[in-house]
Length: 100
Image (cartoon, rainbow, N blue to C red; front, side, top):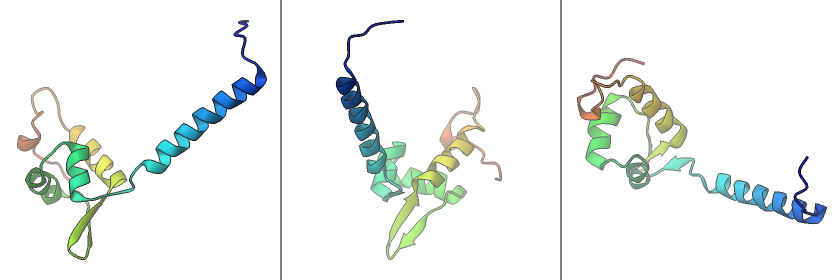
């Protein structure tokens, strides 16, 4: 066994700090993304998102005149399309989308 030399109060404080940081991280995660947030998240332009993703079935929701994207839907969609890529077929702009 190792004797690290941390007393019980110090260990509790370190554990509480780690828990607080993780809770803050989870609370700050966005459930819904705006177009701009989605573009930043995917590092793609709005036209690319429209032409390649939305036209090929990525879910979105309208709120008045604005669009919202559920982050979990975006992640699922991107996982689906990137799973179809290989060493030869790896260009998103040339990818032939398969039905889901």
